[in-house]
Image 1 (cartoon, helix red, strand yellow):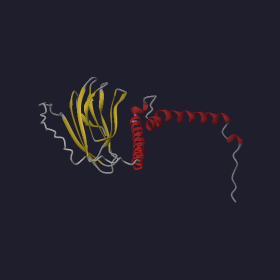
Image 2: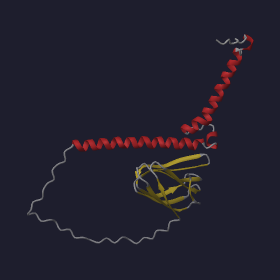
Image 3: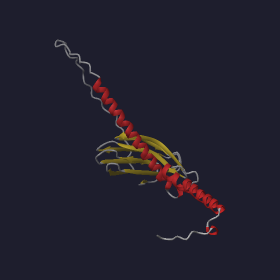
Image 4: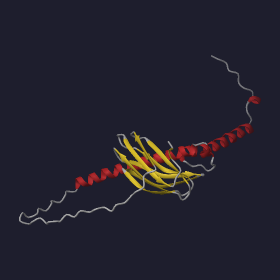
Length: 223
């Protein structure tokens, strides 16, 4: 059996010291919550410190991944429901055309498309995304600048988010789930970086080809 010396009453911390230590700990925890936890986990940065430390972008990616997972789950549930409805619904028997009814004769006409000359693409990148992998490409643009784009995914559709950031501002132009190809024009809402985040939710690799032209500085891979 071991004997332990009991501390004297004078050696114990006073109530005032305990209250002061508790208050200091609460303040430190609150500061860490606002400047570190909220930006890194929820993309909420009321002080601006999280963006300076690069934590807000981490939180934005986490929130985007959560949204993609929820959207994929909703799409799977809808697909199961549609398949169940198709099994329960008996298709109507097709009507059979009478043997003595002559088939209508339709004269074929050749349609010649109008000759149009599209300008060449300024930049073109090709990259491979493994299952679950994401990649982000941005254009450096001035406010009001317009860039034309065309991208296509070979091997399966992808999820994408067209967005921009710069000068403490951010914007989401368009989001898509299970898209194999897209084209159009991107107009910069403000000066900064504007482009696309792609995510491969297939079980196989996909190859993406992105082509751009227009009023922008450079095309660069952000991650």
